[in-house]
Length: 173
Picture 1 (tube, rainbow, N blue to C red):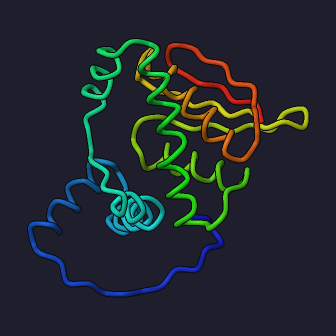
Picture 2 (cartoon, rainbow, N blue to C red):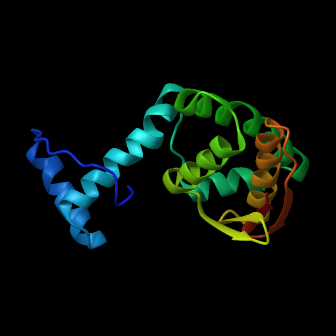
């Protein structure tokens, strides 16, 4: 949430067990209960409600890495390519209505913030935007993400320079 975004005050009834769980998590994260609840609302508003519509499932990162490792590089690249064609387009269309560089970048920011698989960094340098997506998915995770990103940017007829390491993908837009 930006600092200038307007807030509203509402009250909700919640079960005692849910409230206690929220209090515990807020204390563990060293944030106020209000901050945690707002983060949960934002995660749902910006991500969860769109992914619920397409029937997403949650998979532990270690399980996803095992699936990637079990597949050949060729299969990982093909799955990344195909995944970059359909799911992001559906989410972007539902959320923003149009595919553009701005909406693709917004999707990537949300996917890394709320998807739980990577961290997103964006730097403006020499008139270009350099995006770094850092992850713990290993070499095949980078192959998957590179292929995914090539398809996603290809949907808007954009061919960024994409490089990778075992734990990051760099995109120069």
